[in-house]
Image 1: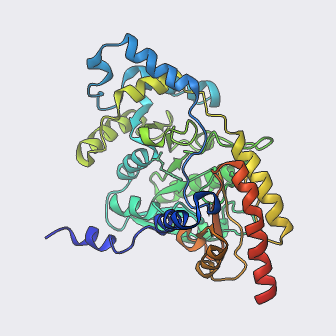
Image 2 (image 1 turned 180 degrees about the horizontal axis):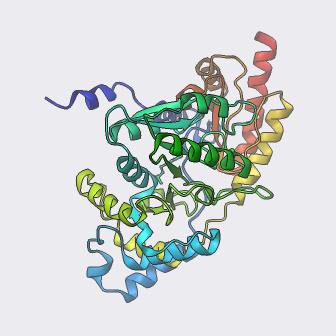
Length: 398
Ligand code: PLP
């Protein structure tokens, strides 16, 4: 008999995938151009030329056994060194190779960080709504409990009152995601300072560490004029989980890392612990070619300007139509309030206009919906009429 927990999970198919599949079917009926599919967070811009060039150079100059062979369990030294140097240069935190663990993208990085802090079934990881819906399986799969701090829906910064209420000796880690999926909001320096101050106090009170696991796949997707503070600069016990999926449009290459703050408790041991975790979970030895390639263009990104352009167009139109929305500071997501409290009913009604939107309930924040605007700008422009018709429908029919 198959594992019952996983078998049961197959009955709860991802809402996002369901909407995406509906979109495919609908596109076959009415044509791809007529379906405004805002469901999936898949990058829509080309990879940087420097990334492809790095791969070509590596293939031309390195030996096959290095390029296509197993990576050392902690990652290839050259990649670890390059990541540490880049982080130190950009953010002033003195990372060294010994603090960097190459991982299979953000999902793999978070999988290691969670397992490093969770020990007993009653251990808790706190996260802040709205949150990436995969956090539940990530945390439960790592043997802990996910506790969700309700959102501050006025700003989508942290609801500190609720956070302090939910902190307890069971809490082993705080899963932070800024810039945020699904709100697009970037946590301010003030928010991160206050978070760090509360956690420092609690560490003293409980007499043990509480880790921040900072999930940062959108770190580079920040709009002009928005400051995006580096989470680890505020709090020593931080595992920074990064992926190149979104910044370089390479989610299929599955490459990222965990950087352990050099001043964190057990900093010297953490990366070796991740290595042991790899042995157990089989999320090990990320592709060597990809490690070598990202090491050569760590600070390159795709041309991300299209996301900001799309945000401007949508934000302006939606607020004009009366949607209530916190303006995103980055990512390619937006999280407005739905025009009725039942976000699932709202998204269902949007389908009448071939607008595919994702209900906020799955992100721990009912009464909202997510727009993933990683689509061509001309399509965004053509979708505005559909939003207008949807808003008119609510004005006229209630
Ligand atoms: N964390 C967040 C907040 C995400 O939005 C995603 C992907 O969409 C991931 C983690 C997983 O990223 P990766 O594909 O790099 O594993």
